[in-house]
Length: 292
Image 1 (tube, helix red, strand yellow):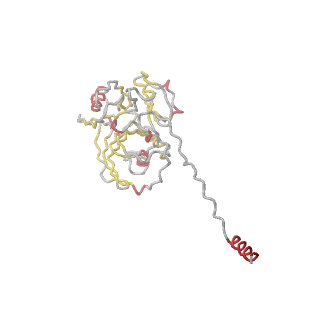
Image 2: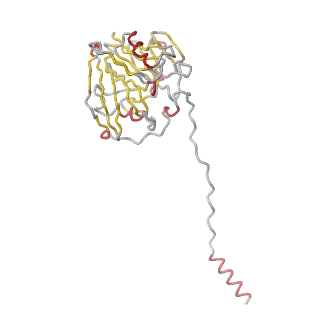
């Protein structure tokens, strides 16, 4: 009897299965935190995964290109763009660098207010202009600024300041490795880069919508400066490269300037009419379009 019980116990043991070991929890991977200035916020730095590519068909002009002539054959163009349920107000000034030059206009008064753009550009005899580069909390230029040959601040590199608007013999949008600061008499560092060689720069943030100020060039003498309302950096880069959405020319390079509360826009028409869209805050410098 004992032998039979022993045999049955062995048979039952052979049929039992050992449960697989429980997996050991793995520590969650964390992305390294980018070292960025306290201003602007970290989400403006192009360190995000690239957004899923959109199609040109998802963009549409939902208003006519409303143009006004400015002095020297420059043009103001205002219109609206639709994209994935959003509507973006676009304002551009298109000009030829053979007739105009770009000037960095220093504005050192931290109490001046956003509306100071009109007085600053009037004093520089500019027909149009926008706010310029970033500045620190103590109202110093972030990076290097050169206004009429006078240098303020110092050259910086990093994930945000990736390019510059530079004027030596003629205006250029240059990436950091291309800049010769000794030859420049107008310069403002800015970023991030939006378009390079007609293509959207990868890695632009696609989550935060904000007012944007930007500058673009066709690779020759055609230029534009502009503002766009409540748009992500990724969508702005894409907008600048979709055929038909830029009414003047094909964008070769584009660079983001300071945005958000700093975004401001000014123009003066042929008949002397002036209009300013001031920012909400005082800015350190402006980019003005000045007749040669």
